[in-house]
Length: 382
Image (cartoon, rainbow, N blue to C red):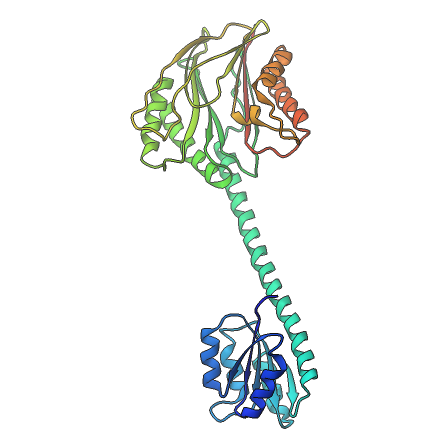
């Protein structure tokens, strides 16, 4: 049983001993012969659940003592002992000191014990209510923080995919929690005839990952505007992040720049799963690799040349797609994902992205996933 303490205060030794004997077998009893001793005990002891005090004491009254303990023990049960029926004193005690009961001397020990037992139950209930209120406030604050993070993320992520002549582009984004650490973005210029695609995964989950992703997305927009190659974008982003992140933090990013006139591309990758190129029903992994951003200083990144022919389908996905698990803990894995790509490769880009995500959901039986899932699909029209 929890170690609840009872503080008994009476200037008459016989009464004090009687109070100790009433409770000593059930609770830890602290005894004080006057108000000052009682205040010292309150200041040096935790877990005082009940205070029983005589009203008439030489240094201070019981009412005064109980009032002075309110800031330190707001939830304690207060019982006042009185040898007379002074209505004004009792009303003052009830109104100003949160007195639970008053007991007229001489008291009957079993009756007082029963009163204390009921008071202890009220004390426990008050503590539980306080914990509940604190937890409710914490959850409301967390819900608001998640709402704010979600608003930031919705602002950062593209509202829609680019509408480009000769190309179809679609996305499926599903965070594991209210907000996620995956990110993606597009940048295109009709004047230069180029399209840039980025997909990334910030280490961690929920609010911290989402906020890191939001900051990083802003950096990407600045780098996009400088007409850099994919490798240069990753190198400069890494240099910017390395001084900000701790060793345990990183961002995996795949970046591709495509010439819209002929479908020629340059792909650089820093830790993301390899993209997939589908041509005539055959699925090929585009094996470009590199160190995730924010881990090693002066990391350099190679570029893989890719040609997107008419009718080709290009798929980017975060590792949440292949790492999704069913209720028995079996992983969806890359083989199933490639098989799903092959089965749905003849569909429109929008439908391909939806079908791939639906395939994952069917495998997991719509169970909660432990990582964000992002799928981007790009098709060059035949």
